[in-house]
Length: 219
Image (cartoon, rainbow, N blue to C red; front, side, top):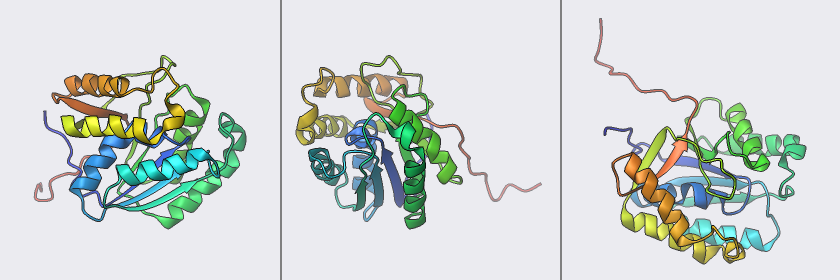
């Protein structure tokens, strides 16, 4: 299977509604990019959890998921589960983030996600990052909202295991959740790997993608 290469990605913006969303949805992608692109700039923003223990977890986790990267993390204080009611604040903060970065790739939640906070952020992203490739990650949870993805990023077995272990290590507040286990994260990564001819993978959704043409092809 042939695919697009991310070797020309030197700056990425990653967005989440809650602390741990980014790492669950795209932790393997961050590990792979940061290891493969020295000096990668990662601009991250989370809408809720600011000034709480969740922010402490998020800072430690994303530092571990972004080895060697230039990481700029912003954790806001919007109330968990109430992001739709704070649409204007979320929009303003996204606009402020956009002013401070010009990423080659934007990664955030998928628009079909049944969690209202995820869904609101996903719908805001293309209104701010209008000329960017946006990939929507998936989060396996009790909602039966897993869909068939359209974009796959293969992971080595070591990266998949590192992602699962880092998640459990850095988010102790979530360990009581029945699905927050290394086995769960590895299971989904294995299924997505099967679907793209790899041992493991992360999968994403996108509404629009441009395939570069061949400059020398003239008529």
